[in-house]
Amino acid sequence: MNTLNVKVSPPSLRSYEILIENGLIANFPDTEAFKKRFSNVQTFAVISDDNVFELYAHVIANALARAGFSIIISAFPPGESSKSMETYFTLQSWLAEKQITRTDAIIALGGGVVGDLAGFVAATYLRGVPFIQIPTTLLAMVDSSVGGKTAVDIPAGKNLVGAFHQPGLVVCDPDVLKTLPDENFADGMAESIKHGMICSKKLIKMMNTETALPAIIAGNVKIKRDIVQRDPFDTGERQLLNFGHTIGHAIEKLSGFGASHGNAVAIGMAITTRAAVKKGESAPECLEILLELLEKYNLPTRTDFSPEEIFEAALTDKKRAGSTITEIIPRVPGVCELVKMPVDELFDRIQAGMES
Image: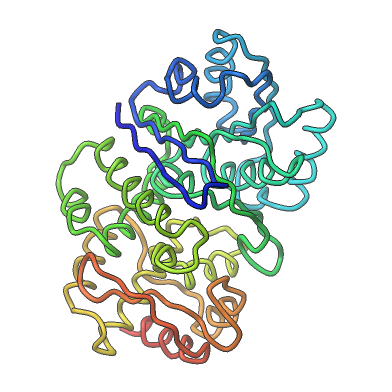
């Protein structure tokens, strides 16, 4: 088993472990990491979506029941549209009706939408209850389940209402990815490519070879873990993890969240890197390697939305501060930098990155 410990500061944020092993979803209550943190819990409230519920809710329920815990389960329709204040309030009311207390815990069973939403519910119900992340998509395993970011979407934009709330445990079972559609697997590889581009030539090499999936997942999680430990509240280095996300989130918003997160981020990385190469800020090999990886994993590099549309949608991005915005610019493969620029300059970059 791959076990990674996340040591978060300040002390008010508890450290936790990330476990990676095939078959782990059926026996995670037997692990020492679970027993150390959750042995005194009485009831687990499992939050999932309808698709994952059908596949894995019974596995989780059986595992917890064998260990002597009570379980309640709630599922909502899959998709980004469910990551809303409406679903959030419904889940809060459900927990209250079931009389869940601070000595109980929540399990987020699903992909990024489930993790973000259930995590925000856990962060705010009774001013905070413990929770476990059990990601069932590659995207959630390599990115969103690690780091304690939780949120819901509002009409003005993606992830604009949320909180930092670290999980007590993250359980990654690569076996569950066997039921993942190819397009969802590609979404996860977009975030893996992002991690490689911002800080790891080693991960780039792993993705270009036949490296085993658990090793790729562990490599991604280590990168995310190390950055989160140094910057738990996203005020500095952690913003590097937003490479491609300013434009990516804008594309998601413009599509009514019909475009998947991974596809949108892939396009965002391609546009950002094309512009950086044209401006002499980025080595040409950055774009070559990026496009090669995106093509290998069947990810898009262009969009039909106009530069004007993308720019307007990006104005609500969380990385904007008044008249400036922080963008992530690749320098060489495996190295990116944070660059603060006037908001108006972003339009020129989007336009340059969309040209042939």
